[in-house]
Length: 246
Image 1 (tube, rainbow, N blue to C red):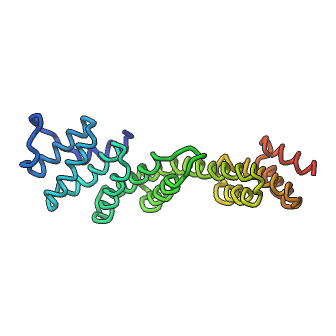
Image 2: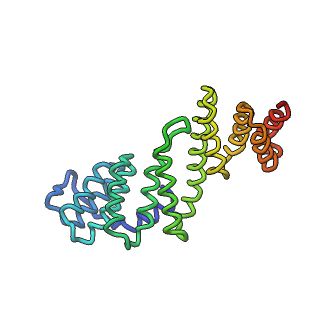
Image 3: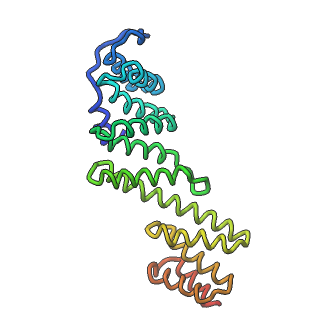
């Protein structure tokens, strides 16, 4: 667990007393049930922990433990990789406790639920887009928090994945000689993901498609942009060779 996450979780924990094996949770107080759930979480029995944190909320909704249990239950679902349940729990926490001292962590944990499900650029990227939106929310709402700094770093990788996916699909269309669709994908990278490493290839691919379509002026402009910004890039050299040949 990252240091920042550890600090938040430790802020919610209690000193636990000893408990018997297989306790009768039906007769536990809110505090006892919370402590039991927390111990299960420490033992990495995340599903059991989540179920009992939710039980605190359901059986003792007006106790001070109910609010703590909502967030801890969400965290337990996250650790169990039950991301859908974690997101539902976090959305509920955010909706009903917007002023809670741990609200920034709730937004951040929701972003992690999507972030941890990111797949390679060749795969469908809906979770990557959701991670981007959630991370941007953390940065916008809590710019001075410790979570914002980590969110900014993760956002770089998210954008790289999204740009990589656009390139992957663009290359597919190019191979199929669907040039306009390919150009749209490459242009999306150029317009929306200029800070990613994918921008160099995207500019070259624009040059390539424009050349194929006989749009020589557009091809030369794309090559010039590539050469100006990345003069030592292998993609720049290929683009120059392409337009010079034309």
